[in-house]
Amino acid sequence: MTSTSPLAVTAPVSSDRRPPAFGGFNLTALSLELRRVMRNRRTVMFLLVFPTMFFFLFGVAGSGKRGGPAALAYVMLSMAAYGAMVGTTSGGAAVAVERSLGWSRQLRLTPLNPLAYVAMKVMSAMTLGLVSVCVTFLVASTAGGVHLTPQQWMLSILSCWVGSLVFAAFGLFMGFLLPSENVMQFVGPMLAVMAVFGGIFIPLKQLPQTLQTIARYTPMFGVGQIARAPLSGELTAWAVGSVLLWAIVFGTGAMLLFKRDTTRV
Image (cartoon, rainbow, N blue to C red; front, side, top):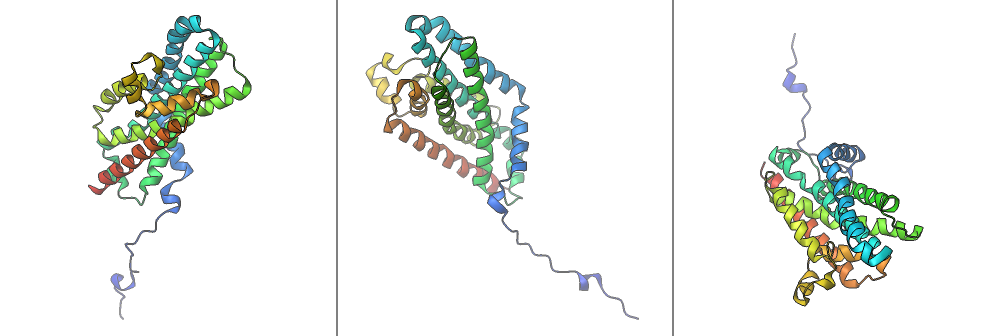
């Protein structure tokens, strides 16, 4: 009687891995990412409180009294855009924590495409930005006395939110570039400086001419102009081009740094 060796009946195992559909992008992974970022109560509270606090400080108690309803709406749009940019940056920069835990290297074991990974991170960060914009507008319309037409409200939400896409990519870029213990220490002051040059905290016309020229090349300049376009009616090709350029720069940088991290496995 003869016996068959287990090795003789074992089918050959292929080491080839099929790339997943859409590079690994799927709704399950996206929903898990959204739940993760929304569980960060400190970040969510920061996004809900600070933009509205700045609105009352700079708008209701500041320029709103001198400039009337138009100035109040101007401040509301600026603060909503700033809240959206801080929210999207925070969501993107959270990747620094994942890097410190070795999660980026774990992803190298999967066929996840860098573009799909960045897309899911950007979408979760954009959710934080949308929450901040909606809360700021809600408080400004109910307790701040801002009145716009329905069309202006809709366009204002879109303009403040879509422009913050640049800073979702910026947060990812900085999250891959800096260690987790230092990322917000660098990013926080950088956002404040960029807000000054972007006309978010003060109108650019109040700055010296040299600083106004420099401001045109900074990331928040275009975002600020687009956010206020439904109210001011001013939207230049330079502002749109600036937003697209910075989105490409930060997005490309984030994907390259993600590849660098995963290559080190």
